[in-house]
Image (cartoon, rainbow, N blue to C red):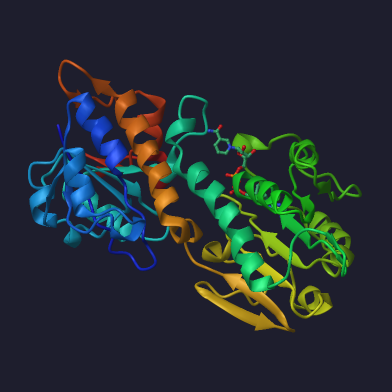
Length: 375
Ligand code: NAD
């Protein structure tokens, strides 16, 4: 089985879907791997590194020719897959709700599209879950970015010349990214607090040594929520949350927001009035900016200043730590391929009734087949 690895062409995308480590492992399974020249540059991997790992390095058309599977980070348009044969699997982030036309074109060309962001949230699929692996790094990077923009120390320092007080960091949304943001800010010595709508996160926040700030007047989401996901909250809850966090936000040096609701725009968590209540020089990082944003005034791909507060709205934050993000994304791919590998056939086999295959497969046989994209 030939596996092709593409060089990303999307804006702000420095990651790559295979590293020399996973190339070696794929070859160890019995696959052959062809990497597009320059694919690893953004992740600090040279063509020579891939060649040394056993991959062939060639042009885009050459790596696609004869491949049964094509790996990418963000799925390209069909026109950017020259010569791709019907029946080829393309595995990448597909974003079908933002670009349905691309998925229809894939179906029309007879491609099999695997949307990595649709990976089921099951124990078996955990090691293949790109949303988790990338969110974790985004949460880490958000704290590092905030620290740089803040320009002051995180820990309390008691020196002979006097004391420097600790930075106060508030995390809103405690999923994978939020938990890593709490852990990172704590490691740096900040005084950390956090909030979420799912009650299960309270214990997680406290176990990381942060203070849980929770609405208790109105009921939130019990436990983990369905599939670990939040839903849109009632107006009554939103009002109680706004009241609770308003006075808290005013005392923070750094706020990091990560709140997402699947299939809906990100919830608005910080208003312009709340920004105005913060001290000038404070920093807000909106990790949800690509999904509509949690913070009023945040701009995707930009750092803006409002009322003296810096609002960081980097698009695609995981790509800002591309070597590590690529290492984990590539392992997610390897874990998926190896789980379906048939040693004798030296190829992956994808049973149609498998819950992972059903979960990620968007197109096959000339049609869109995923239930979330039908009717
Ligand atoms: P997410 O990216 O969908 O959302 C981020 C966080 O924002 C969530 O914790 C959500 O509850 C919170 N949020 C939404 N609306 C909010 C609001 N109005 N105010 C405050 N917070 C709000 O979440 P995620 O990072 O994908 O993780 C969610 C859960 O799923 C976690 O418990 C995680 O451990 C679990 N998970 C499990 C698996 C698996 O089992 N394979 C994989 C990934 C995640």
